[in-house]
Image (cartoon, rainbow over the protein chains, first blue to last red):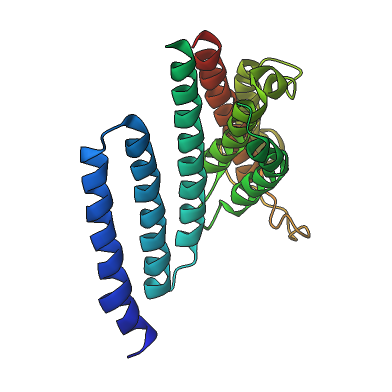
Length: 91
Length: 137
């Protein structure tokens, strides 16, 4: 089993399964914080998929996109937590 | 926000992200990247700083309101389009390139200045929108 087979038959199915599980948590999530964490995790798994795809297609420019996506996800989570904190103070 | 981890990290992230945005801007003519993405990354750097340190400290980096960056960038792009007419008697927006690439920067031409104008416009627009929203919220 070489690296390509390993990525195709082990890593990508694992990531796909985790996307489905996290998406279930995103839909169910009892509180808003659960949904924010699930959204952050969804984007992080997406970054993993992009990284695997960059290895498979031998295109390093996909990694830059993964980097920018990681930045935007981090900023989004920070902004969500900022406004969640603000809302708790107001109530 | 009173998180010391975020504050310390954002102090280092601001120059790093600005450097990355310049890298994306310079690479943009033949490879993925360019003025638009570079401007977005640069404005993300300032927005992150604004979240960590408050809006006032992020606005202190701009001696003028970021809205005034829009006409500056548009003028730069327009001038880079008029440059071939003025010196070479060629059509509007013809790409003029220097003969030899500069070290670090690479090939310099009118396309780079056009992209730089796009970069400045995108930074101005994004920061104007986000600063206005967070002032009123």
